[in-house]
Image (spheres, rainbow, N blue to C red):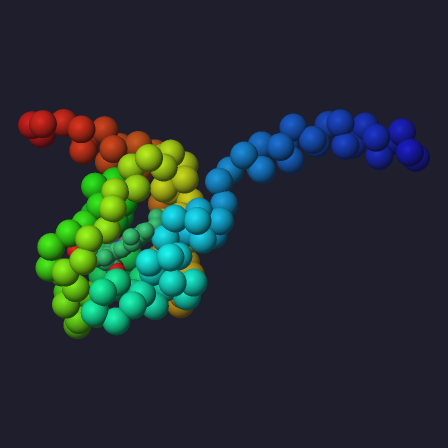
Length: 133
Ligand code: HEC
């Protein structure tokens, strides 16, 4: 009996370690986004836009990915309020980390939208580097 358990652990441990390698969207949010956008995605009045049911969070994934890759500045309107802050680029994050944190944001704070895949981030990053399309 003990041997069977031992074998099961041996056989499944590569699968477990693979699961652990997948970045945790919530952990990345806590580390990289929370200081500005707050724990519940509410942002800060007139300074940091919320991440709750905004057209950027729920809308086109390419635009959303590019906000993280390039950062964002200048005037934007979010849920009816105007912001003119500056968000620093998060391009130092890996494709899989951007995919995980955006999938987390799109399915937290009352949001419900499709997941962002590593391939989508990879594609946007590659297109982003091109000078001419
Ligand atoms: C230093 C503060 C700061 C950090 C860190 C930050 N943001 Fe932002 N973010 C902003 C500001 C300010 C804007 C609005 C920029 C503007 O006014 O043009 C913004 C805009 C956005 C928008 C588009 C507008 C909206 O609210 O829908 C999204 C989406 C977003 N941020 C997601 C994130 C995610 C995800 C992270 C973490 C990976 C992150 N931000 C990290 C400050 C920050």
